Length: 201
Ligand code: GRF
Image (cartoon, rainbow, N blue to C red; front, side):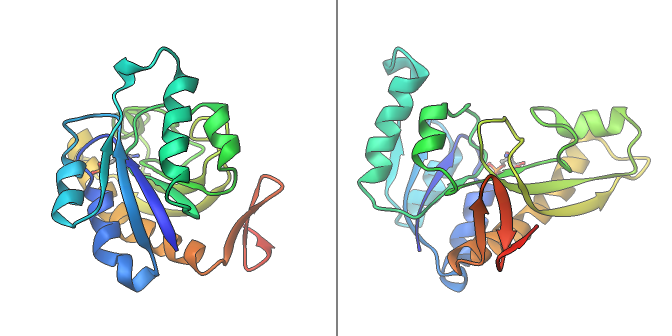
């Protein structure tokens, strides 16, 4: 199945998806970033994957930016869009255009802690557990139907960065696993609900 991956930063999830691509029947047609300095762009180049940098400063509105991204993505005839650390809010225009085809990974046990600083927020709340979530992307930020989660234990001596490291390690196996379900057509968004083998998740 052909995919485009959107990134903004380090791209460790991108790397893990690239490393698993053959085994999960995924062909990465391009990697697109809104950040010229995203290390993920380097990772893609090393992996011989086409890259695009789209400069937000060159567009007047979010819709203009996303319209250009739609144009680029449509040129690849892809079936899935994978957000892997893409730090820009997507317009309803974009989300509707690719409805049911956009996956995201978020570093918290959603619906807890949508948005930023999830690790510190979990520590501040004295949570005993934290983790990562893969979900379908809908208009509600980090609020689309949940597909799968991985849990880690928060130890007394954990800091935001030690916790981030533990969660990332889980992300690197969780995301390829879910993407594989998607490429096998086992996972679908139907009436705004995530389904697996036809059953509501
Ligand atoms: C990950 O924690 C992911 O959950 C979040 O952004 C981070 C991206 O990390 N959406 P990387 O760029 O994949 O290393």
